[in-house]
Image 1 (cartoon, rainbow, N blue to C red):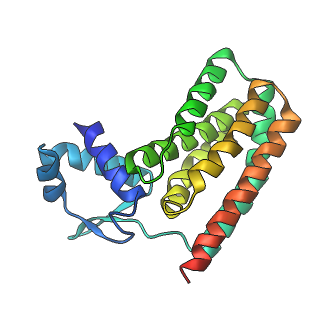
Image 2: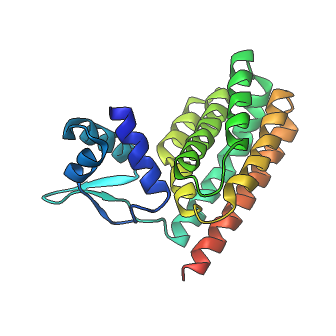
Image 3: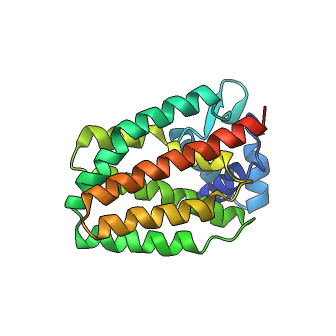
Length: 211
């Protein structure tokens, strides 16, 4: 029931059906899903750890605000410093188990249909898994912990819901995955760098259109 509540809330947050800053009524969610309030609270605690919601004293939970343009710029500056390097190191150390996970991610990402909020939220989770796998595969614990703390991917895809980002990002991810599977550190580093540049450009476009 916790997983069901989590997936329900994540889809609503990612599709902006729950708008940034909007209060989340636990009792309403529980009634809609036909479950008690306890699993809803546990799901919200998970989402709070991922920085998608925040708990306000005497108010309850609210959806986190969208990132500002400066926050987005700072985020991508940091990612460009560490993720291409991590990808190069991960490509050198890819195991058969990691490759199988990468291939599963590629299949999942390729099947996302426009307008499907649940599929979109799964895509964002797959994106986070891919980048987490690269970070851990780098063999550098500090890099892995830094990327884990950012929770960047869910926030980025929440902002990109109304764009064609999944299709573009899926193609970019395939280039990264192909390089990792081939144990090609140069190609992996380049593919991640290109993906981050294009992802930042999409974010800039969205934020500019929103004023």
